[in-house]
Image (cartoon, rainbow, N blue to C red):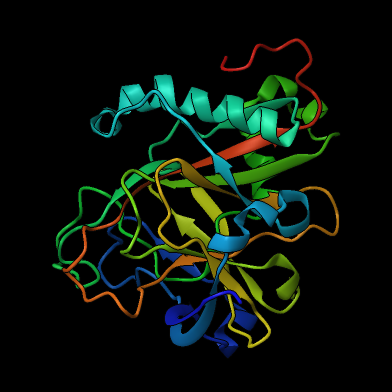
Length: 293
């Protein structure tokens, strides 16, 4: 029998406001008097199944998520060098995702650091000091990173000369998430089974507004039917790959969040360090292109 962990995370609160106003969060200091965000959250307890014993049974096409064995030439210290991350790690990920997914081409959002980010938890997390962190911190809010419409728009923006052709074919947005050190005991990643989500009632599109671009993601409303799972003691060679959006009809994305293990006292285990990569997978429109270009 799978072990079950009882923990908690944050969800979007159901509110009349979102009947007329889209949730948003500004990722910069707004003008005085302008609210930085209108996202209202509520904390819920969730039961999270440990899939360690069944990890080889996870199927990306069926479950929207799986564990990929990922060997890298990168050392731990190499991940502090953005150029090495781009030149080595992102190429490794791109090639392995292309092979794993059977895609014609995989394109990582390496044009902006916020899409490929190393998370090194600050020692004060989750208590904010009011000062900016050098690295993004674990996100304890259930969410999906993209919508299908946003992913298509990003694909067109990145490939203007192929925009008409690639949108005639399937496009997926996938995440790859892995620890830099392990085993993960501090704020591991939990994912929600895609078949336990009602896409019509459990998701709310939300704008994350940066100084020079906007990301449309999906906030998640809590429901008791939702089923969460995680991989205990996840190691650096064990990478989550999970679906965030898909232009193919009747596919559901995988919501995710970080959560505290109830048996771990804060400060008694090393802070979580991980890297997350977001990529577009194309299934047509890239004939003759060399991967990694």
